[in-house]
Image 1 (cartoon, rainbow, N blue to C red):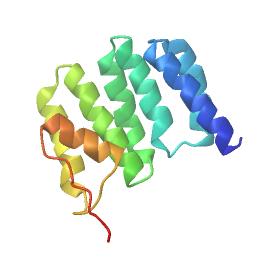
Image 2 (cartoon, rainbow, N blue to C red):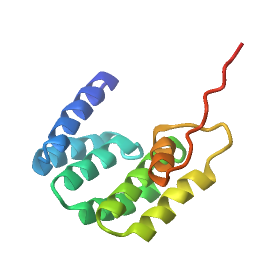
Image 3 (cartoon, one colour):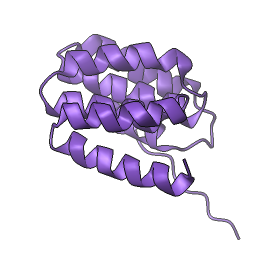
Image 4 (cartoon, helix red, strand yellow):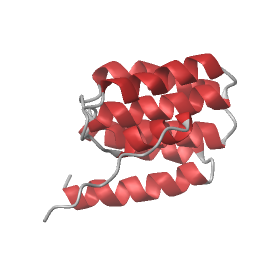
Length: 134
């Protein structure tokens, strides 16, 4: 499977997730997990489908199971930030806050990625400022 194939399937999967079409999202993201199991996008896509279908608890459980196998760095931050979102939607606010704080706590001073930005936003913390290179 080429990178273009993965990108196209990911886009189609997120369309299914946005429509809360868990069945199609599972088929698409399940195939992507077989090809790229350590990347965040398929785990997050499946979780989004479940959250959009009103099952944040299932999304949180799936992300908790996925987290140990996801690549460190940006992918782990993204999965963990979406776990924080799923926990919040499931009414588990204290757990959500702890998970999000862990993402922010382990970040390096100049680090910036989607998961870290989401965690900071959800915690109401300021975003990292871009450094101008002259």
